[in-house]
Structures are given as structure tokens and as C-alpha cells.
Amino acid sequence: LKINQWANVMRWELRTRPFLRTSEFLWQEGHTAHADREGAVEDAKAMIDNYADLCEDLLAIPVVKGCKSPSERFAGAEE
Image (cartoon, rainbow, N blue to C red; front, top):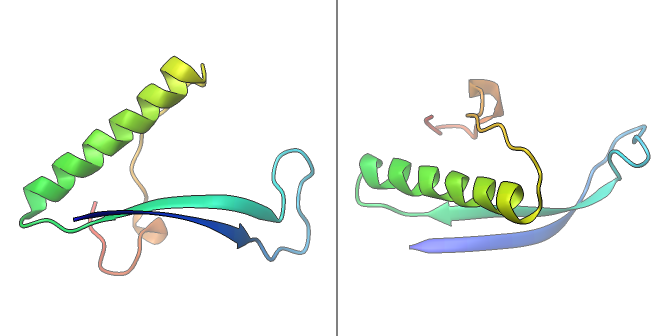
């Protein structure tokens, strides 16, 4: 099962930085359900590679792949 979600999000900050970040932005996230952990990890790595390929090959934006730190993950999420 794969679900892709797009939404407009408002950032409630006291001060935004013009040209670097605005108060409203487009948020994209994917959700999946898998029979086992290996399938989930494989799918996540494939999507990271897809995004990196898009950025590097189509948009000419350099990419540094990484993992979220424990403080950035949702509760119960694993690396």
C-alpha cells in the first residue's frame, strides 16, 4: 500500500527569512504499509534514490543523502 500526500502548510514563526524561507510552503510526504521491516527499508531507500536522481539529473541540484536524527523522527519511527 502506497499513499502520496501533498498539502500547503503555514509556518508560524515570529520571523521568516525572505528568499530563503517563506511562511507558506508545499509539503509532500509518502506513507507505505509493508509485510516486514526489510520491505519498508527497501522501499524507503528506493524513494530516496528516486528523489536524488530527480534533483541531480533533472534539476542539477547536488544532493547529500542522510537519515533523520532520533529527535526529527515521529514517535515510534525507526531509522
